[in-house]
Image 1 (cartoon, rainbow, N blue to C red):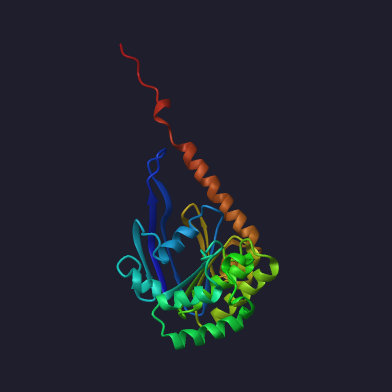
Image 2 (image 1 turned 90 degrees about the vertical axis):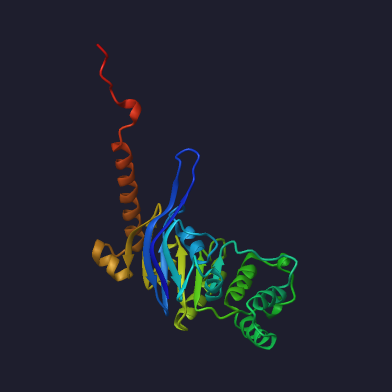
Length: 267
């Protein structure tokens, strides 16, 4: 369903000349599976997801979503995915119903099928009370519900959740996680990015732990626990990130700056 191979993303940097956001990551996510991308801020999770959703172009490597290449077939890729993040844009001057309908029409859905799907989703997420409320008048939790329905309206086979529970109260966050589980059970391919260990433990069938654009470890939670002899996912995460940072610092210190070189004196 999602096949990523040696995916790279670099940016020009005024100080260092080049900043590497992704240093050649590879992974596969399959239908009926929640694939977790776990890492601290700056690990490269959001960059990877933005490439998968065609918002960014990679500097190298490949990514295929449900048979479509993100570089050569971006329009087809966008039809395969629904994207939800903690800051998904909501149009304040639209009601929730108008906004979801607008996006359904963008996907070319016939009005009768669109309205039938909207009615079902608004009922499922208990949104009928806010269907005529302007988005500007909604709480953060309500806006996030609208974002999820908007992402699901065209029934995409792939759903991407990028820190989707960040900033939500515990009740709304639980509803979001419950929805993710239900979508997995319906056979959807889900990529779930988070730094909250309890969410990862509850949801993810496979996990990739990232730091500074590199995947440090990848596999099922059980496999990772056995390989690294650590059953506590939070402790395992801490150990891998700490080792990675220590290695990077060691490599940095091992480099001999040119101005420290001692040149022979002229006779």
